[in-house]
Amino acid sequence: MGYHKLKIFACRESHDLATRIAAAYGTELGNSSVLMFSDGEFQPAYNESIRGCTVFIVQSTFPPTDNLMELLLMIDAARRASAHKIIAVMPYFGWARQDRKDRPRVSIGAKLVANLLRAAGVDRIMTMDLHADQIQAFFDIPVDHLYASGIFVPYIKSLAIENLSIAAPDMGGAKRAHAYSQFVGVPMIIGHKQREKPNVVGSLTAIGDIEGRNIIILDDMIDTAGTLTLAANMFMDKGAKSVRAVATHAVMSGPAYDRINASALSEVIVTDTIPLKQGEDLEKFTVLSVADIFADVMERVYNYKEISSRFIF
Image (cartoon, rainbow, N blue to C red; front, side, top):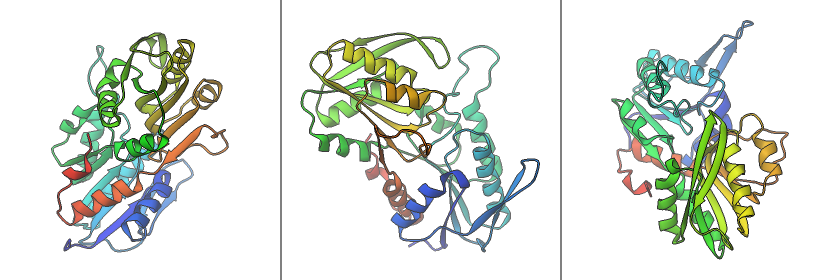
């Protein structure tokens, strides 16, 4: 058992998920609060001693940027309060799409976020289904990169769908889709998209047998749902029996909810790394919790156990 006492804290936007993680771990969330100023500035604080403790701070850094800033301030506060070790649990790692210079005179946002986290005083990062695996190399501290396949694959198998195919919406997702198709034992379809500009898809084609197949489109995130719904409608037009979607992170920006509800998708399976917006029509959504996965890996890290067995791919 770890020598230093373990405590789990939550930032505001991931409080519900952090509560589920703490419950799965068999403990309760630590007591923290946020002081708000009239100009929008805020100051997080720990309302209990964390001196000498191993502190896990849960926060997905989806927009707005306040979520990232709150995590940085919580890390800084923990360091200044003499925590023994500070571990940032970031189920969704924001800015991950900015992992390289893909055109002149742009920033590499993911590297900047890595530098900010390290400067704040974090000792370890725990995240899930990074948009680009190489982001792990932006850190000179341990990064536990977990996969939602541990809950998605059993759920897909439980559906017992006949004539099933796994589809990648673009070439970038081909590796992930191939791994899923191997685990489930079904054929794969690869989509090829051409973008007119960010978040706008110009055209989409597919490689693989579509007619008569029940298709599951696999991706790491759903942002505006433009590519996803375009692919789903295209598959149905080409003779697919049904189309579902599986995505780890439900970013769901702009017209995403309306697009999904108006599309040919029969079911959208996501995790709770990012909470779905209340008040939207969520009839097509199935939410699977990642709390058990994170709680298990946190226990292994805290007690210096191996964690490789938690990685399916």
